[in-house]
Length: 415
Image (cartoon, rainbow, N blue to C red; front, side, top):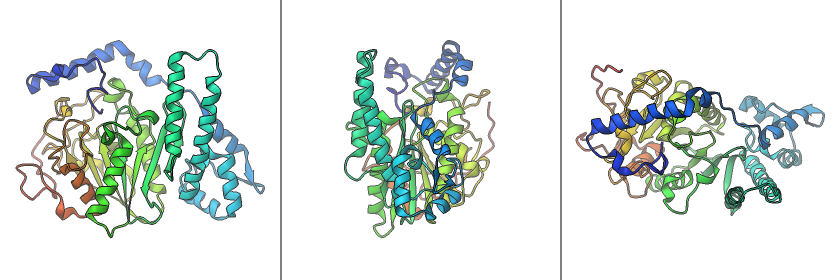
């Protein structure tokens, strides 16, 4: 979840006034109404239609290089890496041009080659949208959507942007790198929440509520916090997020699918850099599910404005990563009930003592989407975690200087 506007523009802020108990009851009631009116079974069984990427993968699986079969898209990063090392530069470039949508998303392929392939794929996507404009059946609204997508593709092509993943299928998926990923000592991954797709990947207004703005702000803050540390930050919108308020946002199905892709990304990162995940709202659900089988290079997972990580306590997440949590004083997510009812709900509140996370100050952040705004304590703390300067993190009010350690965990009973 991301903001009241992302929960639905028809829901005024006044709905969320009143006592915490009444606000919690209202949110729970809205969820139950959605269950009754949208159809849980229909949403669960929905499958996106195959698109350009599926066709590209089929063509890749039929192709070869000098008589050798190409590695399957789902091959291990090590196998893909070995395959590309066996090719000459000309052969690599030819594959990137002919199979751009595969190479641009292929874990284990050389980073620079993925950037090159995705620039080709973006140009192809623009050409495909131009062809759609000639379709007489296209409505005026459809034309506006085509124009917006073309504008976004053009923006992603400007300058020397480093697009690590791109898929125009459906609402679209994308990931961008800030910094030098190949030489980085520390890599941070920003995992956003609800309503994240190609058209919301970056914003000119409310810049720091979109993945690009979040990642760019974090990269700048990390360089300021540790100028001698080589850092890279990934704005990662390479999963299908829930669309607004609905059963998908209250359930874990999309988080489970996103966790598979997130784990694949981390396992394929080049070099031996340490990795930290910074997970906002529903993105923290994705990170919680992924945490159970992340490689040991992931040292830290920080969640902000989290509805839960689909766990009762930090120990349930497994792995060795330190778990950090923050929430500002006026984030409406505080009023969402932290419970699990069948497939719905995401578990215990990560900032509660019962969960046992290390708490970070979010002083200066406003609302549900203000955690990456420059000048906030939350962004400064994320940067310190990202560069490994854990002694410098600041604590929430009343926590003194002990926020680098897990909160004490009293007995806890959940519904």
